[in-house]
Length: 187
Image (cartoon, rainbow, N blue to C red; front, side, top):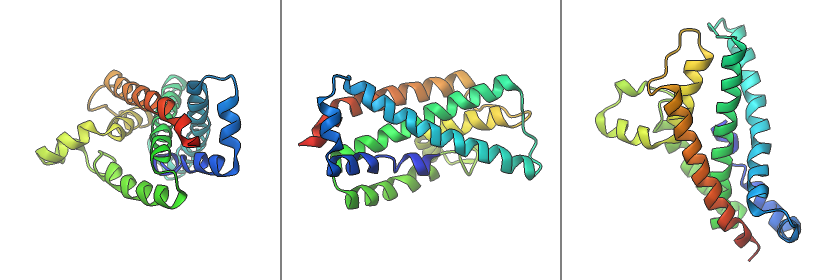
């Protein structure tokens, strides 16, 4: 989900280049509604990826927890993560303003975000300095929550409430920043 959502901002650059962004800016819709709408559209992609992951994991014999309540929480967590990383991507697009720079910066940021999380290594195996970086990384909380919800017997390192809270706070900050700077893309 990270790898798709982080490049979601390129669509905003295309919209600006094609003149669509100017039409958005003259609409009576609040800028926050436009930013949140973009985040929600990214959520659809994230959810389709979650379905594919569930199917592949099931085919591989992974011990999945298919409790409908837990799947509902997975949907919420995927929506938060997709919204967070797509609005972060939109912020980058608003700052750099060209497709080439955006793609370069997106690639430079994606791997450190991924490797500085607990997506590959459990946080308790990391050295102290890396644990600190990992706890500041929203992807860590996304991965932690998804592992605990999707796997039968999975446990959250931080607690699901903490995972959700960290993602809600990070997403709120990104939506607020994106809402402020999104109109500047037309300049």
